[in-house]
Length: 553
Ligand code: HEM
Image (cartoon, rainbow, N blue to C red):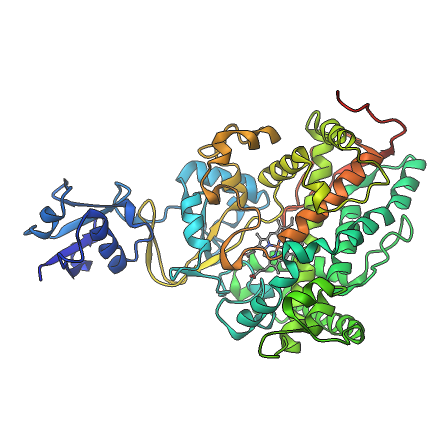
């Protein structure tokens, strides 16, 4: 059997491999690419080309008969280290990135191209705005996995017992939580929470009405945090956080602690892994808040447990449960097993935190869009009127499904202002990304959601907020990873059905009842030291509508 010496162009030929090329298996150029890709851990075999002395070899026979080592190029380029700014000793690139990490990462993409590397106090990460790379990174197909190493942005709040979000893939906790929890978040299961969603938003009316009567503007994020957490508290724990008992009702302690946890983690994780071990300051506070939260969660789930009188098979439990905790207490698999309590309580805590921090940010941006992007509020309202929706309508997934403009508006908002931005995955081997970038084993690659969604190579005039782009063929035929607000693959969001139904019930209700307006011209800023993109200083007024437009003819 002939064997050929291959090496990666750009690397020393002595680092190459001798590969046996069995002509019965390697029938054409693509199968040769596949063979070679396997030996060199090249993610996208179709990008491979072969050459000798700069002459491209276009036939398999030319490759097999080559008397000299055959060079491999990737997408026409030689293999190389990932570029990035040099940075300062010890600090690395911290001050080139923070505080405006979105703007500065954009600048780095403009300077270095689709993949670059930065270091913050010794923690190295690789960012990409390329959807093809993002697709590989998320798919956990042997090259990447979610493994929360000290370099990973979630290291400070890692919780292996949670199985979800803050834990590695392929552990017992992961396998069990991913078997038990997803059925409770299926579209069908989520639908049965729509009456609760509607009650939640309606329970907020008296507070928004009073603010209007007082002529008061308010910080939108604060009230959307109250609203989003009120909804998720009901969903996960069946708990009423009492956020709308009065205009000044305080945030529930669990909600404050979760928000503080995320803030502390962002601060700690941007400082390099060594910092997280300090026995004082923010790292110590982070550990304390984490332990305290777990105690609150154990108590909340114990209070739900008495509802779980009847054990049910997973799908049935998902449709009958009063909340996720009730579901997790009652659900049994086909071997009669339940989710062990330690995984159950940790995963419900994580789902609670993941659920409200994200939805409250998205709701804030959705309100921001009403006041900032011309004509949006009017178009959403008109669609409601045209579909005979008013204050008394009981909204559910079927009615929502008949509102295409609402759908495009939410999509466009998640394109331009998505709350999540830095899901990281860990390389399982030394490997070669499309474009010829070398990633070492253990390297953390972050598909930068915001920068993929705003990449001018993928989106026409991405800075323009334009819901109608979702009707264009260009957007309909996009690469699947060009729009990934909930990430994708086995570690993508499990709560996206809930999130979308919730915002699509809340927003119509809030738009039908109130006219939303910004109260000043101050630029709205995001919080750079939070795990999610949330607006910090967005003040608005919600005025009760007294008249509505007529139905379109
Ligand atoms: C606008 C709303 C939301 C956005 C933008 C969002 C986004 C995301 C993203 C990007 C991830 C992947 C994180 C990573 O890889 O590091 C994720 C995971 C997750 N999300 Fe969401 N999410 C939202 C709402 C929710 C809701 C409402 C829930 C539950 C009530 C939820 C529960 C989860 C959980 C449990 C995971 C971890 C899944 C796993 O580890 O396998 N999310 N979400």
